[in-house]
Length: 181
Image 1 (spheres, rainbow, N blue to C red):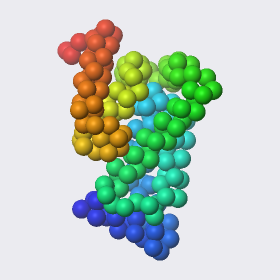
Image 2: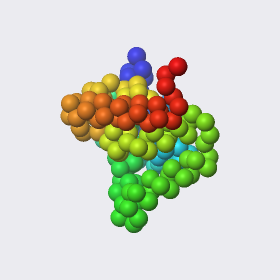
Image 3: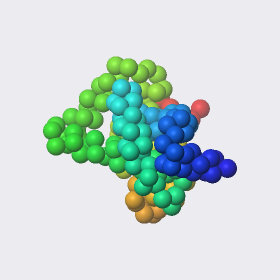
Image 4: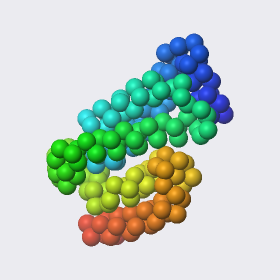
């Protein structure tokens, strides 16, 4: 039913230029998209807000290209995924990923406390692809098939990233006092 509502809202925006319909889509998806970026940026709230805003602007300007080949949410996450990796590529060109990761980890330590900081520190130990798969699968509760559409990775590769990412996170959390008790 939710998929049908999304399609109806998209049609209202494309056909009738109904900005309130798009506002409804933004309200529905802004928290999940922002949360996706929060995990990808290791807790940088300002950057997450900027990237989420960029995602919705790009979605709005390209809404007529939505072909309903996947759900609207999958299409939106694909845009978010591309925006994040465009951001990473632009940072690599100017300062290198290691500097970005150190800066993000430092900002996270300054802003977050307790378990959230430990989760972000744990996520910072993962490779980009592992972090993306872990975030989408466990934190956004998306199935592997949707993650494959969003990332363009084969399902087997996603499963490998999930397995390696879980192992790394488990090891990190155990080393930092989270022994499951």
